[in-house]
Amino acid sequence: MTITSTLGPGTAISAVGLTKAYDGRTVLDGIDLRVPEGTVFALLGPNGAGKTTAVEILSTLVPADAGAVRVAGHDVVREADRVRAAIGVTGQFSAVDDLLTAEENLLLMADLHHLARREGRRRAAELLRRFDLTGFAAKSASTFSGGMRRKLDLAMTLVGDPRVIFLDEPTTGLDPRSRRTMWELIEGLVQEQGVTVFLTTQYLEEADHLADRIALLDGGRIVAEGTAEELKRRIPGGHLRLRFARPADLAAATALFDYAGADAEALTLSIPGDNSIVTVKAVLDALDNAAVRAESLTVHTPDLDDVFLTLTAEGAAR
Picture (spheres, helix red, strand yellow):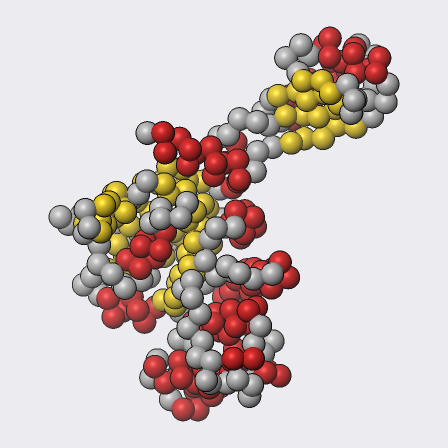
């Protein structure tokens, strides 16, 4: 089955009807993707949802059973070599060779990309500087911490100057400081060089921080897609929390909002709603008109954890 797709202007990745099965089990069930150039696109999903399979197909590592895919303007089947020349892939497991130094790992990648010797050395030196690894250039990679290895791994991906980068679980196992460093490096690639990043991750905070758009993959299908804020608005659970200084004020406020939940011990009142400016103003006006004074008001919205748990639970129930 072949599906024709047209890659629109400014589109780095386009997939239509992408399908893949292994041993009779459907892993990807006709998914569609469109990733604009110069953005970060995050693909989320439970273990076994098909995220790595999607990356493998998009990066020409395995063929799809059906569908059409174009990456960097090229068809992944008919123009696989051109796709490979335009992309970089950092997988779940490091490609760093422990027997080589940081510089030797980069020079090896330069040789694989058929760069001239002088250009390869220039590129290696540039990447060592960018990733703050110059002082470790002559050290064996076997001595590197997890964070340094992932930095070197990403630097190796960039030797060929790719326009599209696939990052499959790039910060798995890293401590919070190293993870933040990786985020800064990824943001720099996008903002300063216009690189497109296709990210899979188990860390929802990572997707929330980095991604311009997020797709949630479950049961082989895309069950939701949008910005982080758009996805959060799909999930109930938003509320305003009012805190009071006196039990009498809490009681008076509770009488105004009979659908709210009061906590007598904490002197708080939770009012469910969409947390829009209109809703906040209506709550404050009601308190003001009743001469009830609140000590504080905080707005609580669902996070990506709520989105993930709710929508993947819905998928499991289908």
